[in-house]
Image (spheres, rainbow, N blue to C red):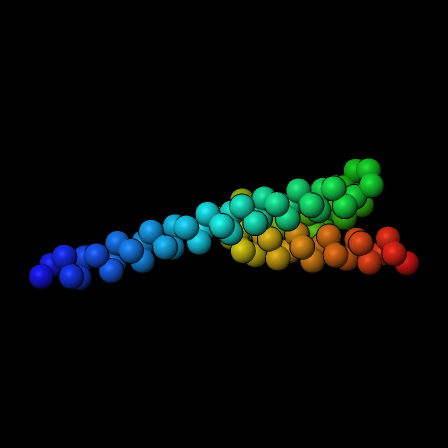
Length: 82
């Protein structure tokens, strides 16, 4: 009887951990793409966007980190096309 209640809680914990791992990986990938989007020194060209994304990563807000890095990279790519 107790197993009936404990098993779903354990499954939710495992699923939550898997999602967090995915967010961490996505954050790391987006930060790397952002670095690559800069032609020289990324901190000089768009330090604000990079620092915001990195601060989110440091605060373990991985989904927010990925979003901020993606937006900063897209902004740089648009500016480069002009």
